[in-house]
Amino acid sequence: MTGPMKIAITGASGLIGTALTEYFRKSGHTVIPLVRNPDNDKSAGIFWDPEKGAIDRTLLEHFDAVIHLSGENLAERWSAEKKKKIRDSRIVSTKFLTEVLLSLNNPPKVAVLISAIGLYGDRGDEEVTEDSPMGKGFLAELVHDWEEASSPLENSNIRTIKLRAGVVLSSKGGALAKMLPAFKSGVGGRIGSGKQYLSWITLEDFVRLVEFAILNDSLSGPVNAVTPNPVTNAEFTEALAGALHRPNFTVVPEFAIKMLYGEMGKETILSSIRAVPSKLEKTEFKFLHPEIGEALKAALK
Image (cartoon, rainbow, N blue to C red; front, side, top):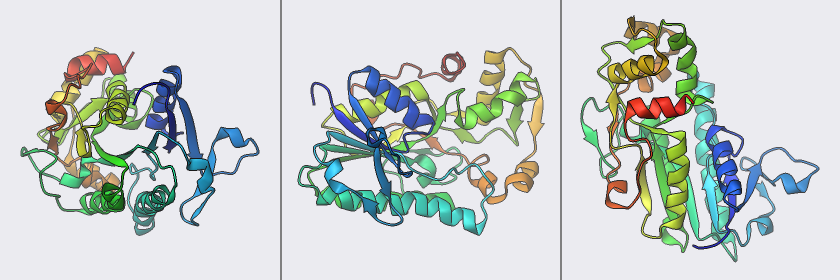
């Protein structure tokens, strides 16, 4: 694709969606969000309600790309009700968006679906690539079903990329922003043994990767959206404390995480996923921030 593009984004108001919208608009592209709240100003976005199957499909004709980011926040204790909201927000919306795109007379050339490395489950120090089998647990099943909901697109003329995101580092939101108060106060530190692996990418590189995925026809299917350098929790917390010029003596015991967050804490904070971007390493994509120390300094600016 060359020249200005017309791009639709779901979940445009979140951390990643806001960054993508700003980046593409600054680059001269037209970005139109899919919004769940009707607005008197129709230019603000395209109204859709996946649960009710509501959208004016004609408004999605003649787009170059669609980026699908919608999803309920994972970072809360998981009750049965919360789990249902998490699943429905991803699977129902993905199924509906897939059906809508396939019904268009002039569908987008490419669809970028933001998935997660949670598919691999807790794998210890095992290195996982896009070809690794799914793991066990709620998150692994969620991501599997989430990606499966978009599978009809793969048999269409819409090139489909499933970006399996790791932890996206930004001081403006997400996991890093939640850690900062403790670390700035000098009471941050590793969790449990600190041996669990964290696969990560800076927000800046993630935004660039989405653009790369849209523009490169050779890229399709699942892609691990992480740097080639996953780190242990101990290495990450040491680098974060160093970037902030604060001590790193505190140890948060595993039982405290389990007590506070239950299943969510076990499958996210305590889980170890050592993912590498096998597909990306065969392309020309270059990370601006491949090493954790420099990446954290950049994210904290």
